[in-house]
Length: 176
Image (cartoon, rainbow, N blue to C red):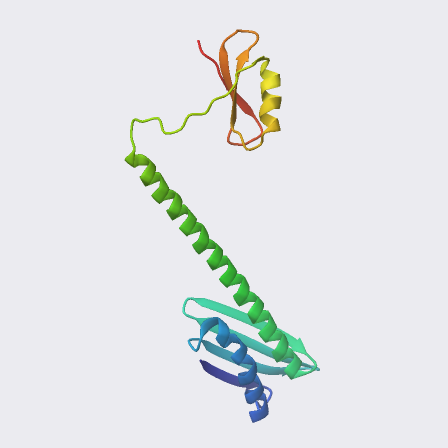
């Protein structure tokens, strides 16, 4: 961990440097010791401004806070940086989890391809005579299903009504 503290229109005292170093220690739990921190302390009119820039490999986090008390501005900057870091880590963890799920699905798909030209699953159902509108209502009753098979009362043939990708409309499979 490298900390660089500079003061503009303000002399950074040893007490300020020690306080910043103590507060930056809170970031060690996220990155270990492998990050750089640049702190700029300024005084403008009646406000003290603390600006912190944390650089970790490819990521950069920045916080700027103005307050009447410089120590309160430093505290607020650390809180902001921790929030940014947690948000980024959560996003990365979620992406890694989704990638692993996709990879698992891909591996499962490979396993499914090992067995070819065989019926692996049979589903039995009762096809009842009904209108297309009734079949759509039955399909809507079961949101987990994507299709519903029925006997069309108008044609007396087996039809399949299915949900389209937009999940708002339906399609129908009808034999010639």
